[in-house]
Amino acid sequence: MPSEFTGKHVTVAGLGVSGVPAAKVLHGLGAHVTVVNDGDDERSRAQAAELEALGVSVRLGDGDTLPEGTELIVTAPGWKPTKPLFTAAEQAGVPVWGDVELAWRLRGPDSAPWLAVTGTNGKTTTVQMLASILKAAGLRTAAVGNIGVSLLDAVTGDTEYDVLAVELSSYQLHWAPSLRAHSAAVLNLAPDHLDWHGSMEAYAADKGRIYEGNRVACVYNVADRATEDLVRAADVEDGCRAVGFTLGTPGPSQLGVVEGLLVDRAFVEDRQKNAQELAEVSDVDPPAPHNIANALAAAGLARAFGVSAGAVRDGLRAFTPDAHRIAHVADVDGVAYVDDSKATNTHATEASLAAYESIVWIAGGLAKGATFDELVTGAAKRLRGAVLIGADRALIREALARHAPEVPVVDLDRTDTGAMLQAVREARRLARPGDTVLLAPACASMDMFTNYNQRGDAFAQAVRELGA
Image (cartoon, rainbow, N blue to C red; front, side, top):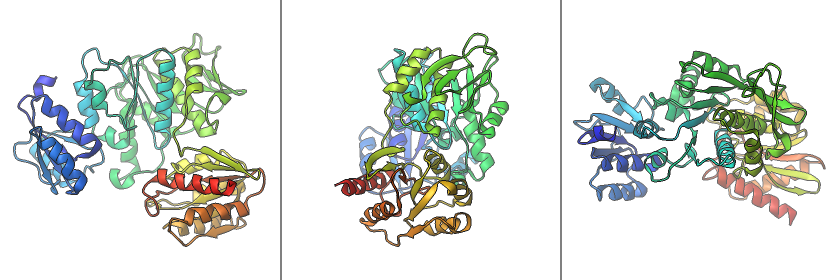
């Protein structure tokens, strides 16, 4: 495969974390590489200088024009399919790949198989759990893909792997037509990135690409019928099985929960009658319902690869979640303070709210076109109070007024650096011993913060000031 790139004119669309590695790899394979990029800022110019020193051509400030002679485009995953560059490519008969597609095609004949994960929420945690389980089984592995480690680096580097735990976004899957995983999971489906995909149907179809060509198992969420529908629609290899995960008692060919235990009725002999204990619910950190679901999905993929029950248990025990994912910050005066700043959409926030019985909810930010009626209706009985921040807080306030009018609401009309401290103080005033003050914004953070990490850090700092 690498020899086919020698002398080929390849356009790389976009710099950044995927474009720069793609340009370097293609240049190293002997391709004539031109990088086009919309931006012309300081960071872009520095990346351009690095590539130009290698002999790569870079055009800044023009990401729409197809360079003359282009035979292949390798695009950054976030570039929309409707861009003029791709329209011109289609008219010229030029194929478009993403960096994941390029990585897939560059794999050697003995390359590590991929265990792939997608879904609206929970991808990163599930992939990290999966990697922890695989390592506990003594396998050489890495968590790669949308998680931040380049798949190109994984497949072209010197490190030899037995198997890769791969996180894939809907963007990446859209541009990866020939990807064929060993086994794959779709964790859940909820409206997200519809401005990019154009419709929920297109979004789901791109997610469903992860099942195409699976060899051993298509892992789906029993509670989310849409994920099972994607399995039914997929063209898989003969013998590939549908394997469900559920928070309830599992049926045959499922993983689930029985009396505080994670159990497997999919990868056991005589699954009609038998079940294999994998771990205790308490082995999962944190043991919130949606995180148990993540653990079951990770276990399903690991078991599809032949990993023992003991390694599943040891891997889950060794796993430590990333910051800002339903992270317990502190207890102050009998009230728990929990940071789930990563809950940037309503689907993630719904799962977060379901983990606690009595909540003072800190929410708000950039809604990205979301509506909140269904979220509030489902959580109303759990809410002690709500503190609203950010640009689109009125949308949440109005949903609370419609569906939970008895819940006291504090509306903070400020976006300065002290807003989070005031939000935490107002939440403390509303809370009672035994309650949880939960930062689960259901919105993006960029109206007030650089990213969800900074928002979560601000919350944790405010809680520490309370404790002091």
